[in-house]
Image 1 (tube, helix red, strand yellow):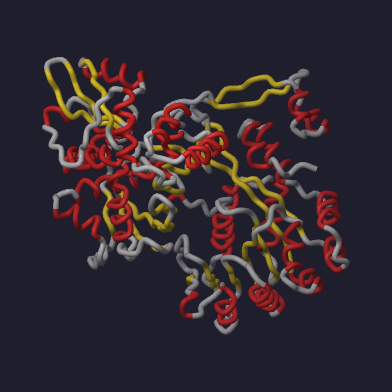
Image 2: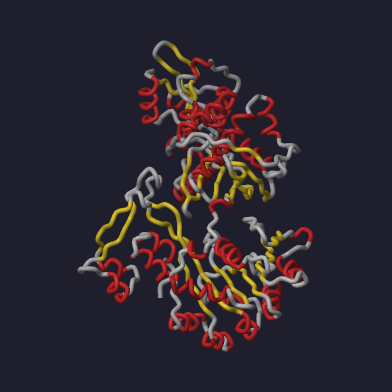
Length: 589
């Protein structure tokens, strides 16, 4: 903590006085002055950070110059009566702690005792006249941790409960590993009787995310606090967060739930756990990443009860749904779904498989990981540690008499080549690819080293997709917009002409209400771009044509682009202009 330095502003004149006192050299002062001009960082911070002066010596020097007392907090006892005057969250936020009280005066050790705004706030909040004194930042932090003590985990939980709507929900592990390894944080807290509030805190975070229909939970370490954010409808939203001091204990609890090594903090770890929330089970994929100030956790929430498996629920336009359904009925070939992470590719694949699933059909999948368990489908999870990769699993599938094969993702020549071999030997293959649009998948396959004649003879369709947020139905309202504004956003005149009524264009938006957490949005829907591989496209693939020519041919054949799909939802009042720009900003001709 000490390396973060002094938070008050030290002038050049005070710097020169430090030189005169022999505490630093002139060369050191000139160096940090140059750094200050370049970075805007305070002089005291730079002096301590560069280790040109000890933080305590600098504070003692400033104490003499400003006539403000310096208090050594290392062995100082502070009564509980004094601690109650200033709440812990205020002490941590401003870097201060009350140390003495006499009549109507309160002595407060501060990182910056010259901060008049904080002094005024303290006076109004406590009713005392505040006597500020210098305190080392590291000493103040240690004193807060020591003196607010064991009670704060319960207080932190209560504080989060007060800020969280909807109350608590019972969360239990379907199967918890009792072997907890060597994690000192959660074990030491258990010895102090502190583990129970931490467990409740983690349960509250998870249950709140599920109630909010979040897809991911982010627990991130800061240098002064812990941040909790939920990804709801594709956008991150900040949530009530626990104090920084409980960060390691929370991470340890999550590691235990996911049966990870809680003593390992240097390497990334991935795990999985199954929870029971009220009357149904939830799968959590847990990813832990070491960062500068601590470990970051991201949990993907997989709730099969919310999985929509009907093709009609994917949000496709009638033309796209017709092409998609036709390619599903093909006896053999490859169907690819493309898009970035979190664009709903897995849902589309599962919907396709659920549509094709029947007693007389053998469907086999290889996934990393298995996101949802589908009855009647043989699902295999990648395990690279034992040599089970997408390519090796796919080769084994061909000996399992499959009719339909799904490969979670095609990443390389070997997997793509095996998929093409499967398609050429009479199998229907589904997979995903990371490209920005449907025509771009042709180029991506070529970059893997696949011969064009193989691609053209096996590929049936490429689906590019994204998810846009839908307008909250509870607070939906209409408004008039000038056509010129939409023209400036890339909307063609032909599209505008088709949507002008009585000389006006009427769009929709959400005002924001309690149901949508004041965002104006509730739920998401897919937008799709489907490139059907017909004879014209096959010819262009053989010619190794540029992606722009393939896109042009696709549009002449009736392909709806991602932007056009989004605009249809805009003009039918399902989403907003802002969402169209956010999701399809790059898809402009």
